[in-house]
Length: 455
Image (cartoon, rainbow, N blue to C red):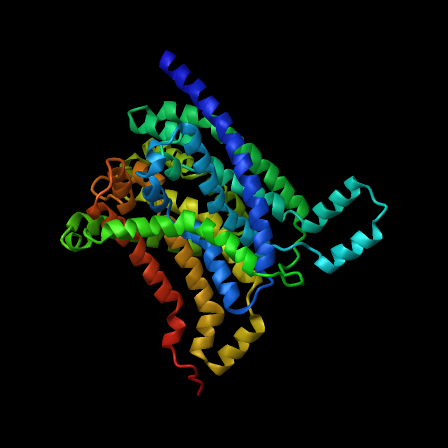
């Protein structure tokens, strides 16, 4: 009992620090990403493509690849304060693209021109009145985005685990993996879970009162110079993506020849692909069947992989579900729950940005390339994004994977704790490169179509 009290007090302290860290990370990520999204919306041509690639690189880079790239460098011997600062910085850079995407797809309700007109007419308005106008003009998008960033930062686990940063997720995961009974783990997780549920309730109220059902649109805006912003974001992308990738690739060269005969790796790779593909398809097609309950179905996925995995683990230890405990069903359910919020958001974005008139003309012409580019490619991209999100999962997979079916990132994460070598680097590089290459070829499949097949 004394051990349990000490664990609860320790977790309470870590939860408090986690709340402060998440608040700081979410605030900075929102400020940086919101400005980036506003400026990227004004760019055109090749500059816009380069800008989006640099911006999304930190978000699309797996956490294991980032932590692996720095785990045995200077960071391995750095004091805890430096590790904490580096962890907060990298986490901020990984979350800032989400704020940029939110700003791009959920712009303010009024244009810059209207805001400028208000500023001219409100020279005598007080500071409070100007702030209230700005809040109403922006709508609920900044508040909801900040809440989502806060939840993601608060529940992060993988990056902190390999960097040995003390967070409530790492402490709870280590305690549970070290033999803590499920009932005690659930009691401990109730502390951060309560914080998450309170925030979700506040966000639900804000969204319900602030969303007026207007179609999403890009507000007209003046163009911004791109060069300075690209030069500013390039080192940020290098810190979170380019350097870890280059570091891993340099170490993987000597290990690639030994990888072809490594049967265990390819078996784990096939397991991860199977789970991720099934979860992505179920989440994508299932979220459209929930109707008005789809928002409630998406709530568990916002709590983080560790909380979802523990709740699913408790569910399948109850009498009605115990018979299928050691099957792929628990992990598949957890992955689907984690994907539902993203699937719901992607469906909403595709519906609001659907080119109805152009799509109708393409169908009349029976132009397969246009149909792919206007509709099918967008859906394929959404499903690919869901697949990659599930494929890179470690937390839920490590707790719920059945005996004999080990996802590849679970094995790689565990092996990375014991050091780095050429074969392990080759495994990690291959596990990241193959799905990324297949996704790129899938989304570029329109080049394989004839430009016109109208009859």
